[in-house]
Image (cartoon, rainbow, N blue to C red; front, top):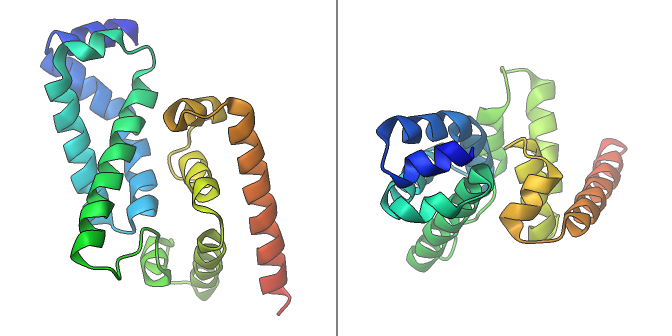
Length: 178
């Protein structure tokens, strides 16, 4: 993507379209999970690419454009959430059960129950663990890419991911046996 970085730095419109095509399908599910709203996710995707367009020549030095895009999107999501928190203290930064019902495929009871259980399990994770799970599963990023986005060592990301999966597995097992 080095050539793409150079083209972006020169303001090449086709390069921005390529970058959007390469990242948007991964960004939207991640941001939907993080923000709890498809509309907010779409707004943040748009604002992310506006910021990238304004970055201009700064993009020439970017080694990993995907990680850079996710970092900008994560910062934009945090900015949006901070603004919403100032507006209403009751806003939550995670999907609630109703949102996950809408995200579940079909109207089957089992899919809704699974979505509800997953929402509850994710809500019980520490925020730093939840973010890694969301980046891995909703955005389908590798642990290396997540490490770049979160500015954490890859080993720390892997440990947090494994720990989070263990917590999710344990909680879901308990939930299923109630």
